[in-house]
Image 1: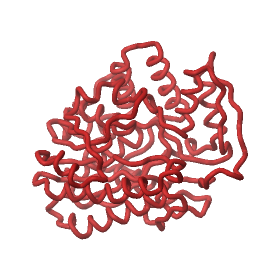
Image 2: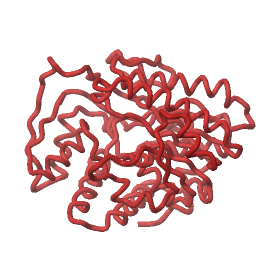
Image 3: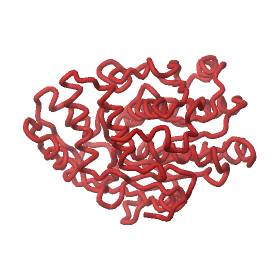
Image 4: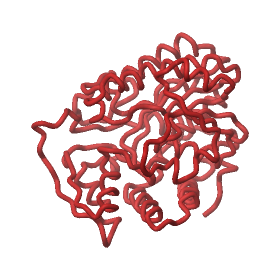
Length: 375
């Protein structure tokens, strides 16, 4: 493996002051680990990690970031916690990220995802050195009519369930702030990023396929896979994170040209149904894989879209971004991470090695200033 960290993004994150909200979560933890590897000075803002195993604890995120805890729903607490923070780049990743939980706790979901974003953007406006804000939403922000083609960035926003609606509303909040407060071409710029279903080492979230399989394996229990025919865009967590970093990097070097909305998802081979992904996990796991059963019962289940696809043409053509890992490789990396964790191996080293593997799949030119043709 070759360490490209001092070369990719032209070294533009080295020495940067970066705020990551949601750093105690799965995606925020991976982002914090990668940014630190890139030489950034990372401040993390989040709720304390929930009891039980977490990427945050396993990878020592508290030790490599200026870690601060506050609820983004509480504007007073948020402002007090960030009063001495002057970030140059913000990745807003803090959220209530679960569809089924949003049915149980709709008020918390809207308060966190929508009003919490308002509070973070208000805090951002007071940071004199700020140059780029990247607000992370979801592929579920679109008005999903269960069509064949993938969603494009200019498609209508919507959402039937509370989670999806909250993400559509978050996009509207971000658009409003972009036009009202981040419109100066010489000032900070705001982008939103929309990714599909992610997986990777260190995700123990409820109601997610790969973490459910991990838990079943850890407890020697069978796993019931719901909605096996539902189609989703699946990708390893490092795939969208590389896109988020590229958007921020392009804003740092080119300004308003790269503000706005961006989709990050897999190619066609990574958009498969739940049953096929479960089979890929089973093959990657090998001996000792948990037993699977598939549930087709939808009668009393809360609504979840059966089909969801993303069109990533814009990111390919304008950023030169493209998926690096095929589905099998991404799943194998995830299985390896969790087997290493279960064996009490050096999981911090394992995480660094997996980031390095991903960087090896990408040449330094992939993260350069040059925008390349779609691939």
